[in-house]
Image 1 (tube, one colour):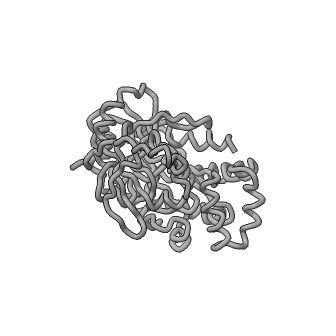
Image 2 (cartoon, one colour; image 1 turned 90 degrees about the vertical axis):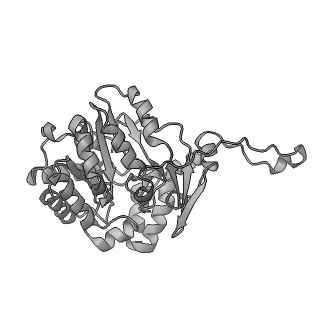
Image 3 (cartoon, helix red, strand yellow; image 1 turned 180 degrees about the horizontal axis):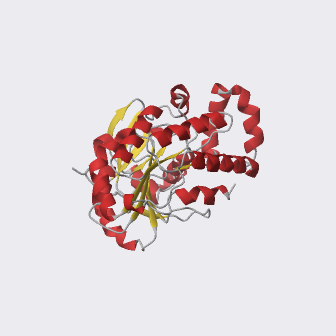
Length: 349
């Protein structure tokens, strides 16, 4: 693939002392790098920028127990515009405080494969790598820039790694060839996020993500290709996607498509996400406004009792549709991602 030109980082100009009161705060770190990015193109209120990244592999430092040690996000921002997205806060690192900018200003990381090649030596045996934790690796930008494909091609040149990929996009089937190559010598698993089978509801919640039926077709294609694949029902949105009958229909459809695991977590709302999601609820589900005020008043996580009910439901559905297998090592998967992770993470609620 061809790489985007690396732009030099230029020092900020120094304002005359007389205008000191007009000076803007000096940008540092990722905010400084983002400010140097060149605009690539625009489309339906979305702008793409280069991001002269210094690193691709990031160590997970969350205080919460997570099923992976390292994360990779080929892009910053995500065009899918999911109303509940928890990752909007990541644009705040670039001094962007408007939550909508997360889906309108997409940053394309440069020289990803080269960075990964240098940094994989940091990964110790048994440490899992998650691709796509804060931005979808197969969002529309990937069709043109192919950063994710370059990353997978690099993994295919190595052996002994544990890689889990999370996406809402059926574009992942484009890379069946390189996924199969990577899975020959690494433990690779794919986790397709499907929150509902209702196409109209999905269009409201996830306005620019592929339809649920297209995602299910991707599950089938990945399974047929011998790639270990499952579904994430996360987040489960209270009062909207959490009806037991609807969740069972989703899990049954996943099993029929060839998925061999499923996991789910309830919606959690960081302040930046709540600023987008709660007005969305007021506009589209006004009857749930008071319910959400009570559930999330002064906190980001839902009550433990709700999490326990959801966990029990998923356990029953996994058993009913035989989605409990954890011993298909021959198909390749990251052991720590995310089958056991569901049970571990539910303890946090």
